[in-house]
Image (tube, rainbow, N blue to C red):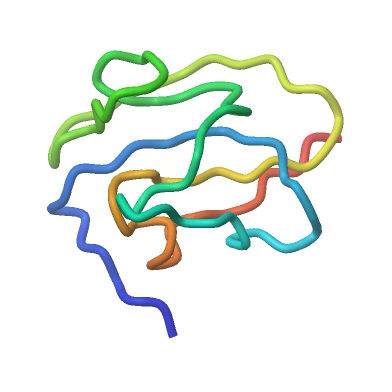
Length: 93
């Protein structure tokens, strides 16, 4: 069972192509994060890729992205959040 991460923590939303039929299978590095080289979009304080700039508790963020038909994985990539189960699948038809 995955650990729960409270909403009182910093979070971010990253959109990645789903590599297989199984979400949550990405390798987690020693820093507790997954690699983001295929990132298509990120909702964070800066709306920029790369350095952690997650959304602080009580704040909001947004991102606009045009996605082709397919399946995508939405993840929180703050340290240890992905491995704790903060991911989901988005299907674009």
